[in-house]
Image (cartoon, rainbow, N blue to C red; front, side, top):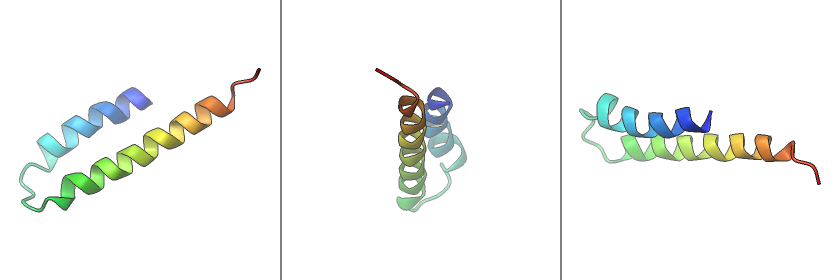
Amino acid sequence: MVLVAVLLSYVVPYALLRDVDAWYGSLLFWSVATVVVIAVNVVVSSAWRD
């Protein structure tokens, strides 16, 4: 899941959002992708036990 989010972080801004002239298009996507990766890591690491 994290690998997919990382790959999308490159593909979406440089392929799908390349015609968006505003700087906040990619910034918004990367911000959402960061939150998704953090959430996935929290879910995965919550299953760890000592």
